[in-house]
Image 1 (cartoon, one colour):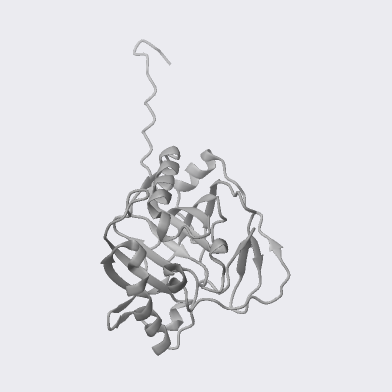
Image 2: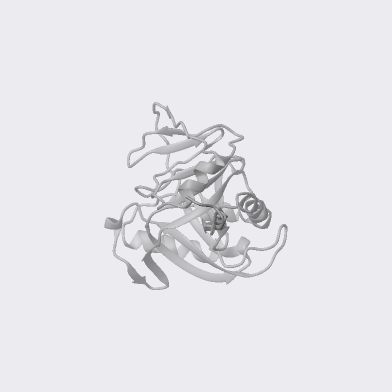
Length: 263
């Protein structure tokens, strides 16, 4: 199955741990608008909706925190400073700082993308003794319509834990780059919806952006996968995202003046 290929190197056993509940603050729309007009901070999260399957719990891992929400859980480390996953059923605005990642690009039906992208990237991290992290990222230039098929340009990326894992540059067909900071609207997903329901998830995110007029979509959909094949399909943790930027706010009308008024 394609989703099993996607993260074949990413599964490690979680160890027993104590759990700490993350108290996410749900921001009202005026507060969210205020943040949208300010300078975003890496790791910043604004909850717009949800969650429907349990809030986020953080637990210690050997190289950084691991996360769970209801039936889903991460099973390997995230890059340092990377925002935690969005709970299934929740919609959030999230800001990502710069992260170093290895990328491989191609063109095909999105459901076949991992067959071409996974092995070159896995070979790269093996040759360079780089540990696997989560999530694996897929970016699509033109996601299919809801329940539709078709070919599109795509890029798969394995994320580095830190910049110290290796330099930027080329390794054959793999590029290692430092990403630009990015703000997204994210939908948390549980189960096998990955490639199979990409168009429907895009439509759902576009509807949320339309309802929250302080944000404007600025890019195509991307997908994050947090689990390897050891995790049952029904309990795999996905995230679908659309990049956004603060929308231009209408100028406030100038106060009317009475030319006959005296001070």
